[in-house]
Structures are given as structure tokens and as C-alpha cells.
Length: 369
Image 1 (cartoon, rainbow, N blue to C red):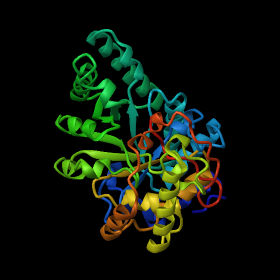
Image 2: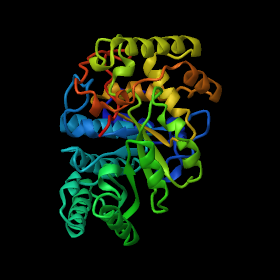
Image 3: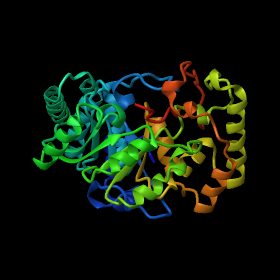
């Protein structure tokens, strides 16, 4: 990928399918999910980093507006078809709107944007107030993104904004907006397997976002893959592939101290063994290859603060995912960890990892927001 060329040269070179093999990773028309087994799940770009300083492993800060727009354009020109944002990601939606206008001028595909509602709905005192906040959030997203119809709108969390919030007023309102044509698809971000099971029980659910990585056994234990197989109409974005960078750390010093260095050493040691035995490039490659190999995951959601980080991610995703036999090998070797380790909100003492993947440039995944 010629990352040293100008953006116009880049887009001219990569704007045709024959020059861009990653265009085969998603189905025509921008709808992900038809990638063959050789490629595995595709890459989706999380954009919280483009709107605010974010991430335990973020050492470069928030990019400028020009840098953020360039990251988006290069991602789409490289075959990425989905962008994830939210009302609460500060400048993210506004910057995506500017980038998408430029994409249209350049003749590049329009990305499938997944956004999330304003989290202030949790403070609503009545169902009527929830409706007002949902309406305002959707209207704001349309304005910021420059879209008449939003491709996907999600609750920011099922547990706090779903059925338990004023009888499910927010999701009910999203359903009505979908029926009116203001939204194409609706869904939710989730944190626990029980959230996914409940959301899938509603036939209106089109999209699920969940945290997933090679030490997170909860989804396998709960049979989430089987549950999603029964809903092939639902797209799944998997975030937290690198668990805010600690899974790709060069040593244990950046891990949350409350869990003990023994846990960190066991996890990282097992990963080093698997990198060697499976012939992967490094730990980031192993993490991505494992997530991309899951047949129930549509796209793996990762973030980038720089063009170089994006380049590294795309290069790693141009390698084959793990085979089913290799996935089983990973599952057998990776140690069980405390459940609180799987949720960064439970860490209390955030890690200060400022290390690298391969070149010292790759940042955190799209995290746990």
C-alpha cells in the first residue's frame, strides 16, 4: 500500500477493484459479511480516536481534522466498508461527515456508518423524555454525518439503555424511526452474553457490537456463536480485540496490577508460544487472526490515530485468519482469567502501555465504549 503517496494519487491508484484486492473482503454495495473463509471477518474502523484523545495505549493523542479525514479516506480506499462512531465521541461524527463528502467527490464507495445514541437518555425521567432525546440524537447524527438516512443506529449499552430504561422506550423509538425510513437498521452495543441473547430475541435487532478477544471465553461458554447462527440477518462488530493494548504488550508491566503479574505472564507467555507454533507475525497478528476466524463475527472493529497505524492494521488483515483447528488450539492453550480483567471499567488502575505492535506505531483497538 503506497502510504507515501499523496491522497489523490492513492485514491486514483486504488479506486478500482482490480487494483484493490481488499474490495473482495466485503459484499457489493458496502454491506459486509460475504467474505470467504480464506479472508475471514473484514476490518471495520472505529473512530472514537478521531474525535477525542482515547485509549490506554494512545501515545499520539487525537489527530488533527486533516489527519482524521485522511485516515478515513485511506481506510475506505483500502477496502474498509464500515465506520463506527457515536454521539458521545466528541468531534468524530463531524469529521466523518467532512470525510464522506470528500469520498463522494473522489468517487470512492460510501461507507456503512454505525452510530450510537446520546448516552444522556440514561438520565431521562420519563418515556416521553427518552423519545425527545432519541429524536434529537438521530437528528444531530444526520446533520453531522451529512446523511438523510442513517445506515445503523445503536443503543450505547443494552444493559442501561435497553428494556430496563422506562420500559424500553429508546429501542421502541428506534423501531418507529426505522419503520418511518429515517434509519435503515438498529441494534445495540453490548458488554455481556446475556445482553446479546436478550437483544437477539427481538426480531427488530439488526446489529450487535460486543467485546471479543482470545482470552474472553464468555461468548463461547454461553453459546453466542450458535445463537447468532440462528439470526444470519444480524451483523456483528467485535471490538476490544487487543483489550486496550495489554494483549500486545511486550511485558507484564502495563497490566492492571490488581490482577497480579502471574496472570499477565501466563497470558503473554501462552500467546508467545502460539505465535511461534502457528507461524503468525506477532501478537497483534495472532489477536486479529483469531477474531477474524470466528464465523459469527462480521467485522473486527479497530481504531487508528495515525495513517501508519492504519497501514499496519490493513497489512495484518491481508493475511489469512486462523483455521478452525488453530482456533481450537488457541482455546485449549489460553488460560482462564478473572472476569473483571475482560472489562476495562473494572481495572481501576489503568495501564500505561506505550509500547508497539511491530513498529512502535500501532495503537489500541476501538475499546470498550
